[in-house]
Image 1: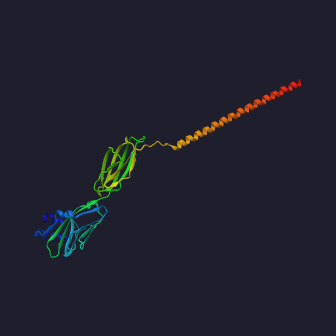
Image 2: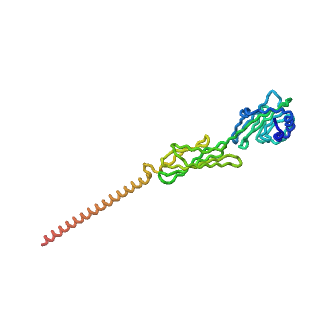
Length: 290
């Protein structure tokens, strides 16, 4: 049964009816079982519809929903409700529903639906609960490895933004390995959405491995870490090409030099032969003169 301390929960236009409830004790409140049945879930930026259990065969006198001491939205048959309503809500009395749009984290919590029918002083109160979640973006994984080959260690960072509720980063490694991890969680003061990140240092003593990170059901791309920069394959094909060309040039130069020397040698031999022949001719002439 409602108590005088809860009078502020009712909108002013329904205040007299609240007093009637208190005086007669005519309030039917659904219990914990109904709370389980009236769990509503929504996503940040999305919509949700609250359902109040109305009797379609009875004439609805009033129906309104409140959260704690705050009036959300409602309907009163014989009088216009002057209390401010939440601008992102809409009441449908024929279906007994309240539609709420543009959800954010602050909308989650416990609600109550109040109903009364014409000709019946018995009021019904149904407890409801709204849970709101926010979807994190896909985790982004980056690495920063030391310059040695193979690297001695790698620093890994995984970040996911804009989710709710709070969730920590989970690391997924292709082989058993111990990570030194430091987690960090920040919350936006306005939207209450969470940014989660984790930094891990990985020892590369086991060689190349593959790693990813997860936040909730979302997983990052698979990343190769601790891979040596240079493999058994030729590390610099262009260097080898240059070396081959250099050797070729040297061979050509050596061949050319030898050819030139050979040509000079032959030229010298020819000159010596010519000089010898010339000497023989001179000697022959002198004998004839004698």
